[in-house]
Image (cartoon, rainbow, N blue to C red; front, top):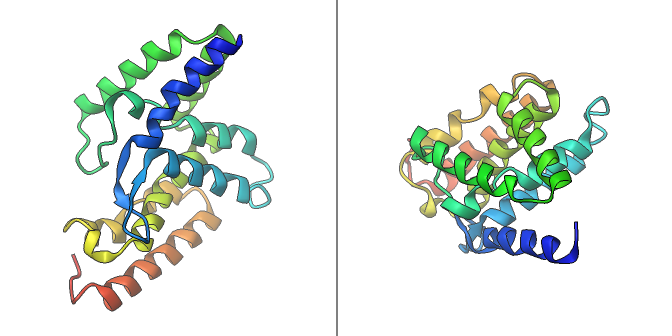
Length: 192
């Protein structure tokens, strides 16, 4: 890949810094998609010793690229995203990936196919981290920034995504405990 191709990829990816997510930070600033992608990548890195049998470098790669399609469509919260939204995002992303230098294009296409299939332990770990990070961020954000449906969603979301791992199941339970404490202490009696 030459220097211009490298810069062109980075210029597209930079859009994620300005693409807002549904969540806010603990100080009420709207989170960007890039920040979410960074933190799930950090989560994967930190779990290297918990999952020594997995290719954690591949999981980090998946985490880094997983939301690049949102460069073209913006972020749509999971509870609002339709099949048509997913199809549009996937199509635009695939078109862009095909324009990349062959080695990068082929590697990304392989990773996206593995991520979509959700058959390998690496793909399952990436997907679980993606979902768990959103819950963690909600617990860190002020509760008055939550949408009405998030009281219930934060108590039920992602349990299915962590079933394959005892460690991740324990993490999900801790996140759930944090959610219940937050609702009790800050929710003004709301339970979903």
